[in-house]
Length: 285
Figure 1 (spheres, helix red, strand yellow):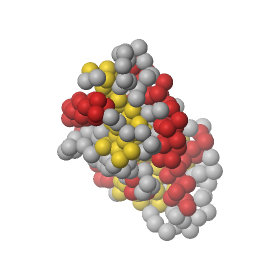
Figure 2 (spheres, helix red, strand yellow):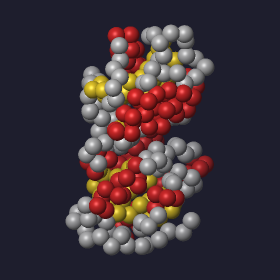
Figure 3 (cartoon, rainbow, N blue to C red):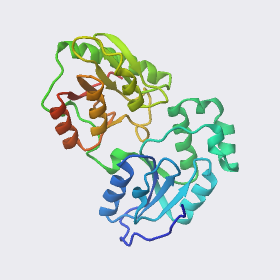
């Protein structure tokens, strides 16, 4: 797809924001919110990851992940001051990257730090900041995105579910310490699945055939220890609730202050309709 240099036409009241856009609705929500504040935006869309509707009517560039030199040069040309990473992406293989000289130099420098998602993203943030841009978090732009403590809908976990939540936090934080994943599914104290590169949706898909008789399991998502809160916080929305219900879970627990809740009202409605609890929990540091 061709890129475009269409202007947003809004008077700038803050630094121009570049949105490095993955999938889902978050990139478009960020763009709408920022433009509503009178700020200009520029979207970097990635082939095979970004929904084309995300960039409709916005100045943007279509690119591949391996073209870091082209992307950073274009951000300078556009007068960008701040950068945000928004939306999930499937991590590409080295072959899929087809790295340009800037990307190849970056990968050679970070070496084994790029083995885990968190290590790679922290290195990407450093690279972007060293090029003169300020990286901001999604929660800095949409203040209501951060999960707060307590129930999201009407239902609450009972004592058995609380024990499964505690076990899930323990497992998920151990995974996070190894920079593997952010989530786990636990039922009656038994770990049914853990999250790795496949992501939450695929993990939930594996659980359908593993649910045991009795009360359903619990999905737990927490941020990784020492994770930079500007990037890759655990995120959930209505789709997560629907997939959890479809595989027989009884509830979802996500870290308060350390996760993103997309459209709280819609999540509450879906949870109540499907009979699941969704709760923000305090996670030990």
